[in-house]
Length: 103
Image 1 (cartoon, rainbow, N blue to C red):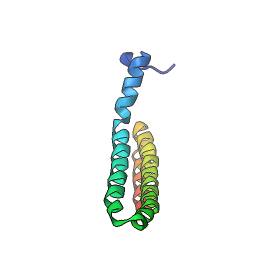
Image 2 (image 1 turned 90 degrees about the vertical axis):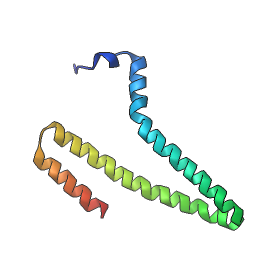
Image 3 (image 1 turned 180 degrees about the vertical axis):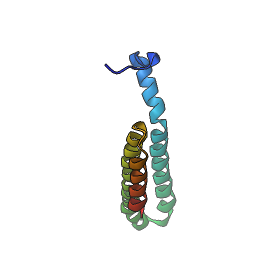
């Protein structure tokens, strides 16, 4: 049975630890939502055609960002596994693939 830290055994503390780990992601999503809302409010002065044009563009930008985040998350998984095994060769290979996928 895997050992856990004593302060994480309590379910209430587990929730707090999980929320603390998720704060950067929550902040990123809230900032993205605010930026989208502010962009839409600024463009609404230009009329309904401009509003209609910005909605698909916002979705497209979000999708492009999600692809980049997905690649980053995948690479982080491989890098952390290689680091946990203390393997330098897989670590270098993951970094090399990450660099190749970003171009």
